Length: 122
Image (cartoon, rainbow, N blue to C red; front, side, top):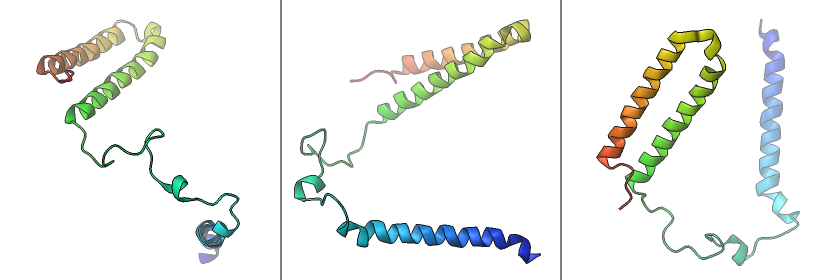
């Protein structure tokens, strides 16, 4: 029974060995064979060609994430509209009604977010 798993074991050993060899070549010996060596200017952090203005780990405003989530929701809404539009002839009035309810729920959610001021940037 264990002989059935011998090819899998051989594959795992070869994969682990190859990964280890590539890791050693990339970090250890490989830097001596590199064509370009990094100097201080190349290894320094930069932001669009300039030195960083502030710490890169600053916190973003929560509204940024809210707008991103809203974009994803409405992007997915469009993704659901494509197959519905293609199959509209086959699904008939029931499909039209179901998509109308789906869009109505999303529009109500969008209006709620708008009224709460989630899309305002002060």
